[in-house]
Length: 604
Image 1 (cartoon, rainbow, N blue to C red):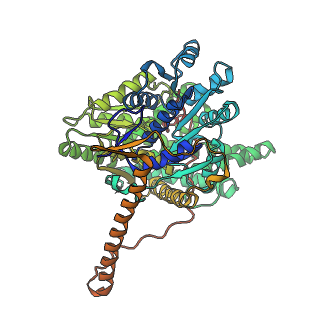
Image 2: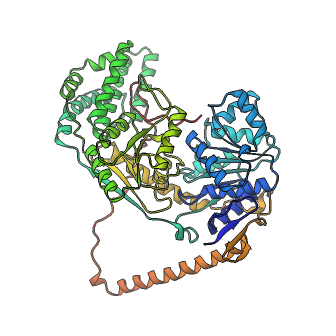
Image 3: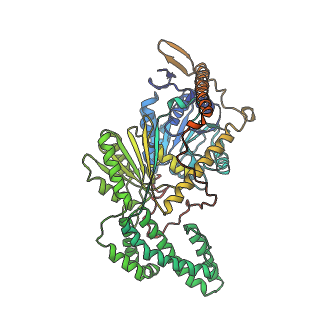
């Protein structure tokens, strides 16, 4: 195996042509590095760190969105780069400001959460003038008021010689979003590596993605019927009054638009606005209840209403009105002592049980949008022999429910990585960057609308060996539309990136370095050669393999064309894409919702 050599890299790093190509781009100037999950964006970062240290850069910062990723970066850097351990420090909100000031002065390489860097720059505790390299991991967060974007802003303003590497597998699903990311980070070029490229294809491992459609059981359908009938009447009233748009599918976005119309009516002293506002409040809560019952199960729906009681005791009038509805009273009475009946629950147990029987030494990651569902899955799966199951959630407190502290999160990840538990059930905080090589199966309890999040979740498996991804979709529910929306956005992203590859010519800006990789060599057996010479040979070798493979495929196609009568008929026709799919990404959180572990709550 060819290995990469550099004065500051430890032995044993495999030399891969596409990583050397990406390193060449990144050391030349500030770069947005787009590379699929599992192909080693982190290795490119190590190479750039080694180059920076060898060039006597005074200070290097790596930002990562979660404390788990911060610790992971530190551990890997110490394994791969020859540097005094005391010079590599983590820099997070768990450190007191006085200690952070000392860390900043003493360390050469700091791995930090972006919120802390932003806050300490703004307070004057630190200054970014001497930061010679800023690496932004999971760079797709760099938009709007997110701390990652604000760190990039401050770095551009303060650094004397800015050099920024922003790495992500999923920069956005539209050209506008990707261009905004590019401009906000102030990078000079985009280096795009695709799974289908000649250079990457030999290193790709199998990822089997299965979408499993489940039909709701008769019990759930019976529970849904009176709730949906009541919701239908309320929606029709609001449509007749002109507050709700007449569409086939009700979404949180449409409900929010109706609420804004009611608010305008109230501001104009229109008495219909008050009645509409009350109905819209109830419709929003019923919409959430129905969604939970269809996609999550009976227990999550019941927990949602139990949290309403907490709100009621705090004097929430609209909550009282909703809970006193006869249809809600009847539902709560009917399900009070009922066991879980949603088919997803039993299916998850079956999939996990079968996987652990076949692969007893491997690990499983399960994702759900809702903390209640996470708790229910953990409870169910701990009944399986040989399954050691626990949860991984964010820090925020929701009502009486506590989150996980930073310390608890790190301990949980370490237990999972070491094999002390073999099934981890996580909310969105577990989606990004976690390197668990033995996680051979990822299970989505429900699809997610965002292409970025879907890519990140899938990337937790098939990193070093083959893996499987199972996506559970409840028929006739929000799941169906979310899945299609995510697929459409991901396809758009790949199409846009294909058009934007290395969009700026190299002579359109001042380069930091010529990119000759003079300090990098490739060792294979007893021979050594410059890294760029190896890259040139790899391009030629892999291109010839691709050409040979393409010719073989062409021969196969020609043969099938010459004997059309023996060709098998297609198994099915692809459904026509629905152009009018609505956006599910902006669901409004209900005050007593089980919803969605906060995307930024866990960041410091």
